[in-house]
Image (cartoon, rainbow, N blue to C red; front, side, top):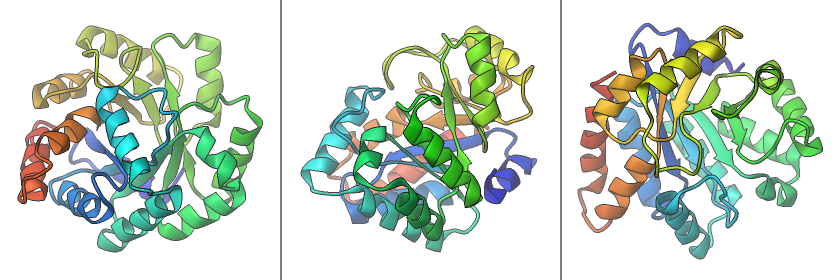
Length: 266
């Protein structure tokens, strides 16, 4: 596991860490960096930086629209890594996770990719659509481990016990617990289901368990945190806020204040 991620989850405050998802370079490179800086300033523990693809199968309409705009602007995975480097230059304590899809890694040699993200100060990688049996993921996992970086894996509500144990064996950093089936930003998470799911996972591992999908409001975040989650992942709510206030020159400050409403609940 990344040493930086270990330190983050060992901190007693906040008890539940806020993980904020941003589509890298959305709405543009400069604004994206300013938004992420404000998120860090307002208590976000880990930045999850999405690298865009036209094959974003897990994303709902809000995040998919942001992916499409970044692609239309001509930004690439190399731009996202450059952005990560600037985030690290700004803050040496925040966690940085790159989140994306396997199609990007067919175009970017895996060994080179891991070398580049390690040099940029990234802590972990999450490849949404790569099953652990996939050859490319095995290569990625080996390269990440040899560079001291973590591989984050998703665990869906439909994951059976055998597969859950296999995922836990190859994961590091933290486990990303998907609260609801389907794509991001559509369904709402139910506390009782999340609580039961967290208990099931924690019976099998000491890794931190972070909950994402279906968390839309500060009150949702508080309720999920009280269900025993070690971290809360917020994506669509923040991307939607950016989209709705895209022309506001005070957007970075306003987003920071909005994020503070979430961190204050944790």
